[in-house]
Image 1: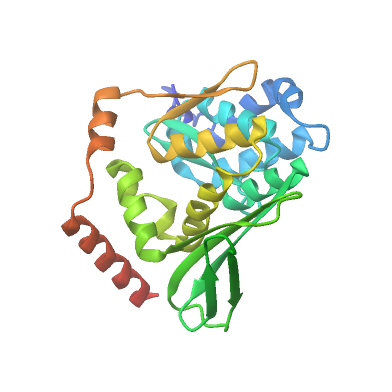
Image 2: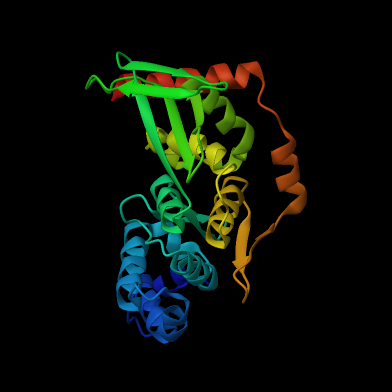
Length: 281
């Protein structure tokens, strides 16, 4: 049963509790478990309020299994990230299940907490003064010019404490689009947050490449796995030792979707749709 079922009307004509009210009751009942998962600096009441706000703002969450929503909140809690706050992460419904997806700002925060490295990202728009070089003397210089009409590149930079050189990743937006078509399963592409927040998605793509070379904490490994699983349409569960594991409800269908590679026609059609979307803004 999902929270959506609670919209039904009883036989005597009385309206049953709304999905949001039922979800609030569910959170109250399991608040002790939530408190156990939270780091000391986070408050279970605040996390419950944030979860209820996200639930109320997205009607698709009412169609998700309650256990999957709560599991996503637990994952966010153990990562120390707040859903739908400042780009730290999001509760995303898909195929009757909810998944917590860390945002790029949440990933940056996780790296900073470790004290062993720093990372940051940037977005380059047409007209910006931008120059970079890789190799044995890498650098990245970016001076925005205030014109945010056309996104051309994104970049991410990571610096391990004590290291002489930074790790730099620069992606043209065309490469981001090809990556999107290749890695995000077809069923998710039309509803993906990339369409409403292209810069947010693009910056995260570049950042994930840099994170491969950064010191890996348990939380960071779990956050990256959660992000990849969500893009592939997989559910995730969390065990007692805080290991995030992907689960696939429809393995054959998902394998077929993941094995399909975008054709040049797919890429051209997608880029044409993006150009039209930008022209209508």
